[in-house]
Image 1 (cartoon, rainbow, N blue to C red):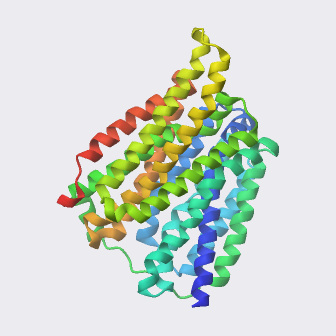
Image 2 (cartoon, rainbow, N blue to C red):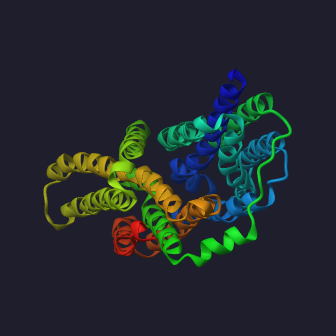
Length: 399
């Protein structure tokens, strides 16, 4: 029993290392752009690229790695993450960094879903749900800390040290996982019939489209939130990092509340409530843009300063409460439609989430290049409005 608890803790820390490596780039995006001599929009395509690789890699890893020993697979993924981030820290330019980043995040596509599959082999059946949920605490903590850490390191030490910090975390995680995960574990392969059945279920395909569109709408803004906050507030790196951490903290609160109440609400209502919170947060972000534009039409600067931080707090509160909760509610929604297909459908839901992030980061970069940072909330609002319209037409209870 103690051995299984140690393994769960190691996988939790592994997820923290993986999540920090993913989230640290948005946090130091402005410093990356400055250091590489490219625009913020171009630097943001590193996020789109990483999300696309993870989108494609997650289901491929689920399909083709089942026969590989779990300890070797998970340790190898973390060692690749270590070497990849160390190489990113030494990248001479934007093009080489893009290639190295794409290779590095293959580890994220492998580790997180396969860690969940592995932990189910290590604990008794009655404890599997809680054990799987517990290792995702690592990703939740990374979501709170990854962007603020990246912003602080980027501002005070430079973006190369941010990648170095991610490499160090991954190295520690690989050693812990190698020491605690027993050898000889494999997972059952997913059949081709299971994948075909997922794509043949129209309701399930619609719900997966909601995941993709929601992620796209949010990452239209989220990928560029750190440089946008720098431009909007002209505040210290510590103040901006604190606001990013506040967003993450509200995300954990919303996710915890959703986990406790999703059964009572039902999957459809839970997703609707999460989307409503996200759209409300984006609405407050639109108000931020309008307030920042007010001095150009004669409004006093003091009024702008008085309104800006309360509005940014409201963005963090509303969007944060809905963001991670939306992911949890959608996972439950996907699983409820066709429980026998859950292994394949949840892998595809993860893939759609990363695919949406890639689309959103690309669209956000295009919006910045054409209209500037102020266009991001309005573009996000259009995508999220379409997401809500689609989601409201889907009823899992009718499946």
